[in-house]
Each structure stands twice: as C-alpha cells, then as structure tokens.
Length: 162
Length: 124
Length: 93
Image 1: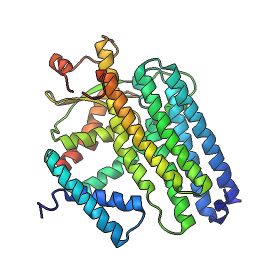
Image 2: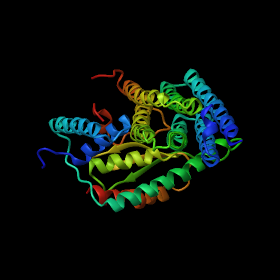
Image 3: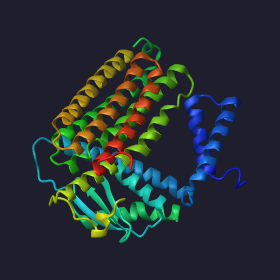
Image 4: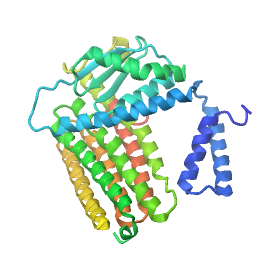
C-alpha cells in the first residue's frame, strides 16, 4: 500500500484537479487522471520531501472557517482604511513574534494564512531563534498581535501538523 | 449578453451583486497601490483583489454558468485554489526582496537583520 | 429586467476593473523602486485574470476560463522570478 500509494493526499488532490480541468467524471477521465497522479507521486518519492503528518480534520475545518471569517473582516477593514479621505493617524510597523512551532509544513501554512489575510504580511522567519517578523498595516497594540497569532493560528496548526 | 435573458431573476441578481462586489474590492486594492505611502504599506493593498475580489467574481462565474447550463460548473475552483496557494508565496518573496534591498542600503526604517550570520548567509 | 441589470453590472464591473488596471499601470510607470513596480505588475496580472472572467460571463463562453487560468499561473511564475532577481541579481543560481 505504502509502496504503490506513497502520498495518498497528494494523489487525491492531483486526481481532483485533473477531473476539474476535464470537467468530467467519466471512467476514462478517472483512469487517466489516476495514472497521471500516481506517476506524479512516484516522481515526488524521488524528490524525497521532508516527512510530515496531517491529522484532525475537525481542527482543520474549524481553522478554515475562522480564516475565511478573518479574511472577510479584514477585507472590510483594509478597504475602509484605503478609501477614507485624507491622511489620518495610522501607524504601520513590524512585529517580532516568537513561535513554538518547528514543523516546516506548519510554518508554511501559517505564512500562507497570515499573508492571505489583508492587513498582515509574513516577512521572514529566523530558524536559529525561531521568531517570525510580521508587518501590520494598522498597528495598534503589538502584544495583541502576538496573542492573536499564537492563539488563533499557531495552536490549531500545531495540533494538525505536529 | 444574449444568454442572460434565460437566467432566473434570483441568479441574475446574485451574480450582479457578486460581480460588483468583486470588481469594487479589486479597484479598492489598486487604489491602495496609489494612495499608501511606503512599499511595506502598499504590499497589503493588492491582497484585497487576490482574496475576496477574485473570489466573488469566481463565485459569480460559477453561479452564472451552473444555472445557465443546468449542471454544476466547478472548474473555477481551480483558479481559486491556485490563487490561494500562489499569492502568499509571491507576496512573501517580494517583501523579503524589498527588506533585503533596504537592509543592504542601510535604510533605517526597517528592522535590522536577526543576526549577522543570518544576513550574510547566501541562502535565506 | 434582471437580465438588463446583470448586463449593466457586467459593464460597470468591466469599467472598475479597467480603472484598477490603470492604477496598477500608473504604479508600474511611477515606481519609485523596483519592488513597487513588480508589486504593481503582479496586481496587473490578477486584475487581467478577473477581467477575463467577467468577459466570460458577458459572452457566455467558458473559453475565457482557460485564458484566466494561464494568466494566473504565468503571473505567479514571473513575479516569483522577478522577486528572486531583485534579491540576488540573477534568476537561476
């Protein structure tokens, strides 16, 4: 099983992509897509990516809902900031946040979540001190941002990936 | 707009609303590119268009073609997935490139490199 | 009635997206620094993809979808390459 299907999640995602591109679920499309995704997974074995684990689907779903709500909320907030007439007192700046998470996949997911949310951009990660640098458009309280990142995103991601 | 006449009213209204919302958010993001003062502020602006902006237009497109062809047309999901995966990567690469350039020029407005080794390291 | 409303919304959306592309193009020309231009170019790509999707709704053809998909993929690759170039001065090392 492990030998023929080394990355079941990747294979399933590739098959889904193939079916969406072809816009059909006919047996031929499934067969061809299955073969293509299996071949791609065998190539992935040769690349030898670092081992990762992915579990607790319920946490993942909860996190996805939370991220979507946060994206909608901050879209509204950033649009207001841009459209507000005239300059006003707004401070944007960098925040240094210490992280407990070490897993590369978890860190990548955290980076994508933070950057996809308008108003915050992940700038860099220092692996020797395990701190991340965050840029915030409307920075009011630095301690509050540390709390938000740790509680809302880092803890569920650690449950999923570590 | 020849096909739009065959669309039921609720679908046409919903699609119109989603289209206007998506285009408006994308325009707001582009305006932010003009209005905001520094590069690090401007980097936040296009995110409006790449998250909800394109998301709303994709939803409108899915709704329009699904109702029109009376079968689920879902391939727009692919664009959404690609955007979700690729946009953060480009934004991060670009921000890091800007930070690297600013640090190399000794710009005071950016935080210093985490460690001297980290700054001099060829890969990063 | 609702069809006319959708038609007008599509037109308005196209106008707004065109204006957004003009803003991004202005930032590409204006700069001031290379990273600003690359950021604006990336915005230009994404807006073009959105505009193509709206064109698809206007004409009722799904052909535009493929074009939008290709634009988003090419935009990603080119922006990543340009960012890499800004950092190192060369794309492939």
